[in-house]
Length: 466
Ligand SMILES: *Cc1c(COP(=O)(O)O)cnc(C)c1O
Image 1 (tube, rainbow, N blue to C red):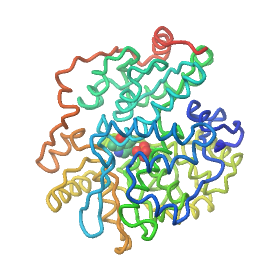
Image 2: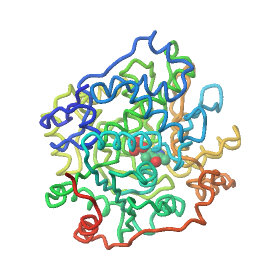
Image 3: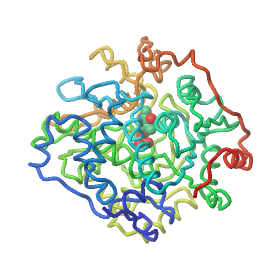
């Protein structure tokens, strides 16, 4: 399988190449040259498979040329063997139409584990082949950092430097990162906001002093391999509810548009997806873009669903590329305009292309709390604030009542227990696998937000590329 950039000028790469590259060299994102697809019979034959086997079948076309089926199966068994639930992503019922897909049974309690556990193994496999070393540099507002650290801790050919804004993430989120004491893990608390930390990371990717000495890699959802791994659970849920002989809709708590884009890929591959609901909090750039074509960034408002507090959704570019006729040159132009003015209009082709499958809703703090209460009082399910936004959208939009709607549960409620307790009166306990989090030793360094200080820190500790 070959991958092309959404901005049309970076070289096409194979799966191994896009996994190690992250962002394309022209600033675009990699997408498969064409969508692989399964027939209804092939999808029917996936019913009842264990998750790791389903993952192997769904992902095989994407890794072709870089991994054999046996290699891929081995990696899937290893990655998903670490989940605390035998079904990996179990499906639960709310009522006759509403369902819940639990994606938080991985080691760090958020759906990001599903992709990052596999990505860590893919990095290790490909780096061993080229006898190279990878320096991962990232900024986190919470969930990505802990999932990425867990996925690469102790791996020989990888160092990870994770920046977080000091005092602005929850205690659970911080401790999930800082109590990992493996020698290749560097936690850095920055005196500044998440945006400041993110700006330093972006600068490092464009700093020839750093990129000349180190092979710097990305773990955020611009990395294609992450999206690919997320396609699998759309198939898992669809098959449970009768696919390919019955349509299913999904409601997805959305920030960077990675998770819901994976649903779009599943539909391209032949899964009968009736609708994809993009659920946002008050940071609603995607809701505005999908409902009236206005993609313009405002100020970020802090909410109880911090992983969705985002104003620019990187992966949206992948949808605009695919719906807008795959014209990389035109999209590069459009994105340059957006980067300069922080605003753009979607073209008619982009709007019409997206409207076939996508719908959207915005959810405020009261609506989020009401959805948490409904789930608890009517169905006995304690859900987290991000999931509640998805559930609110799923119930609020008038979707066809004959089609089941699956809300993606993106985080374990214990990860955001203060907000859950405020809405429901219930304080969800931490699951046993992270139960001693508050008695473990923490280790991190504090730096000012100054770029030179951060670059000097990384340069001193990281292993150069060969
Ligand atoms: C990352 C995250 C999201 C947003 O997912 P995207 O792929 O960025 O749209 C939603 N909920 C939780 C809990 C997350 O960690």
